[in-house]
Length: 253
Image (cartoon, rainbow, N blue to C red; front, top):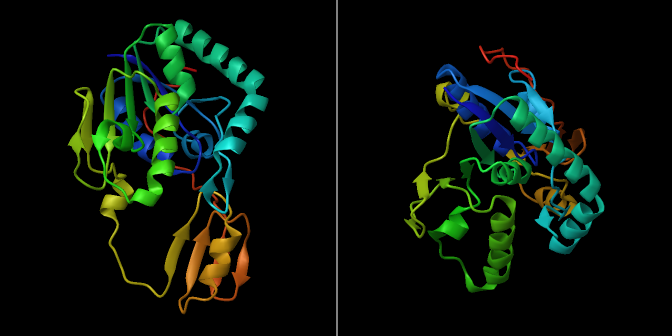
């Protein structure tokens, strides 16, 4: 069995909900997992796994759109925190004799893996645009180029890329493998119903989107806008996280 350092990006909840299912599988197989995450990733995973709190590279959003210059400036300003977290993960890798690094778009764990010369597996959807043939409208070429740069910087030179995609695509790199979305058992067991509202989720507050929804003849339940309460046809809800029942994950951190 292996000792695995599993880095999880804490931006939004998608990375951690996907990682939770993979982590559960690894634990059932008898592996020891040392999880590292931040923000929502930390909140989503800490009740079920031992998670090391690290600094996470932040993406700057304005109206739910990425602003690249702000992102660079924001992370350069916080460089000392990033260096401190990198040292923390390096010590953890030595202490627990880590054999393998798995990263869900989390760069700290990836860089530690390179420093310790450990095999690295990347699990994410972002590398679909870099490692597979994807077509997109001409007007989005600039955004696509920026996305490729970010993806390459976040988890560079992994030994294998397990790419999650909603659509089939031709792989461009031999170390890349395409998979359909990883769904939690809770989702697979849920019975779909047709309700009287539309669910809206955003990574960061988007006032323009909220204003747009007010002019649509529909009822919305919206998460991620940083507010609560009813505003016209929109019911704003907070991202309160429900604690999961513990598994047999060894408490080793």
